[in-house]
Image 1 (cartoon, rainbow, N blue to C red):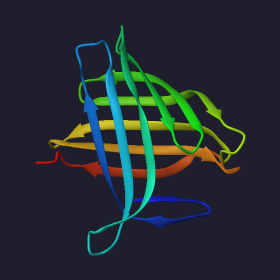
Image 2: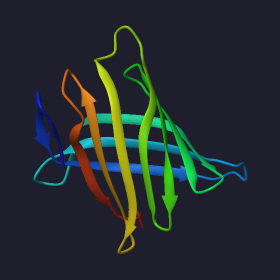
Image 3: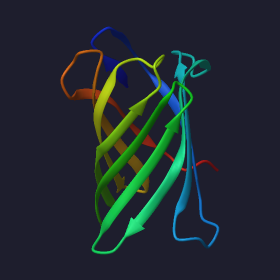
Length: 138
């Protein structure tokens, strides 16, 4: 579910692709679409490309670029089956909507990827934006 002040709540479907090419990072691609009651994909909602960079002492960085003119750098910690992150920097183009901070929580629960995101944008304080339970594609 996705929803935020000034944004209608919608159900969505998401595809995430995570790749490892023997470098000390993971490539990340995520795309999200609105989904109707019939389960069919509707209009695109979001796209992000980036890299997960594991660091010593269970720390991690997540670097993301969005086609909406926003670049984010998250920092956080990992533990078995969990990553908790918050933005350390947000850079916006002059045409991008106001967006100042976010947190993300990822967890591996019952063989599925669960995630939740809070954000501060459009003059609003940090609050719930989206969450999902993703299943591995067959």
